[in-house]
Image (cartoon, rainbow, N blue to C red; front, side, top):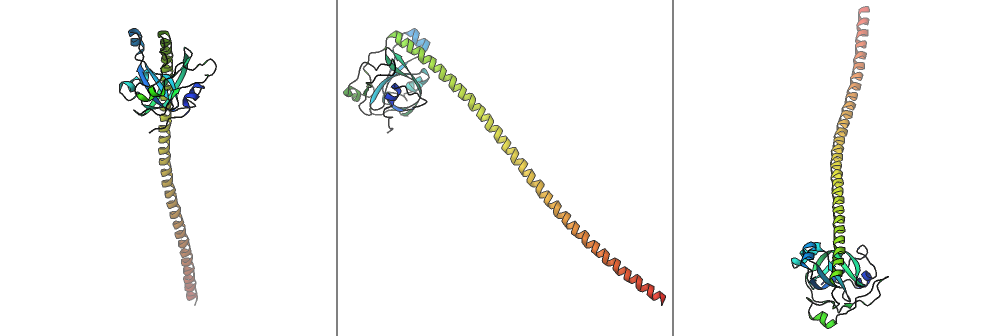
Length: 254
């Protein structure tokens, strides 16, 4: 069983960002936001979540790029998720987490803890949600447990959809930039690999030349020794020849 990040909801309500905190939370409620057909065709399906850290609950909206997780049944009420990228906004004096990227850790689990809506003053103009679910309702059915706060009106939902759309587009651009950076890194790695291989070949060639040079030096030393011996032999022969000539001259004189 995955452990939830205790106190994460309060930290996010206090202004923590996904760059500072990537908590593990549980989805206690997940349902589709009812929208007009025109809005649905324009923006796609929208899903509302209630997230829990085991102690507190917080309303959230799912980015449309994560809809396939819901449609494939991988993300549902009871799921435990790792929040990788998120933002939050204020709608009708209530904080709403906008989930842009997550990883499903456990597809379904019984409700962890007895979470309730966070009762604390949000920073600056932030205000806590106005309604609180009972622990009995939360534990009775993990598929439908969560916040009993009043649903957002059409105008607020439209504003929230626009914010989610903007954040989704920004997240897409960031992912594209990361992809481009990955390509650059891959290119640099490939170039480094080629340079390493070329350096290896040059090193092997250098070793081969060094071996040849050693053989040439050894051959030169051997030739020098042979030349020295030849000089010594020549000197000996010249001395012997001198002695023979001298002996012949003495014989002729006698």
